[in-house]
Length: 229
Image (cartoon, one colour):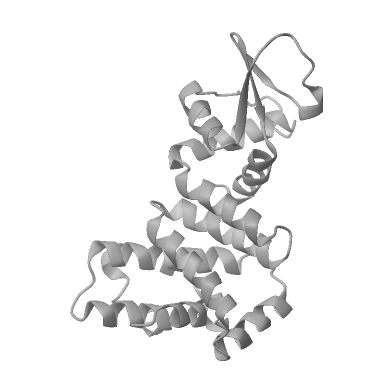
């Protein structure tokens, strides 16, 4: 059964702009019982696919999708770009199916609601042409592999390196998290030979190493800091 078109028709539906935070934060077992939610095209389609009842996986997908929509609608998005996508769906254009299909694959694979909100922010950046498709896919893949636990550390490190940390705030670090963030290309770890790193902003020195934030780290860290994840 086709799920891309119902997903697009739900995402680009003016009615979803009125979804309240209470609705998107309801428990998994209540998703299909809510009178408003069960009439949304994507919810109806997922329920139809399962025939009888929703398994935890499908309920979790719906919850991530609804939080994605809620977060997406909180951003100012170019209406011309939204209308272009609505017309493309009506005309069955391949590029929009590719775009929505990619979103659904990522939403199905991510392991937290936090990441669905991050995905929504990245998608709004792409629609507003602040990042191109290649960069969007790259950041999305990073977000998908990012440990939810490490998001707070990334935000703190971003604020520390860009001198935007609130005065008087303690700087907490976890070298295990930094190693994971380094593996994703968000933080770079180098031997400390006393060299000048000022062109990278503020850096963190620990033992024989220097940790600095990368371009991708700044981009994703900035988004996460605004989301208050």
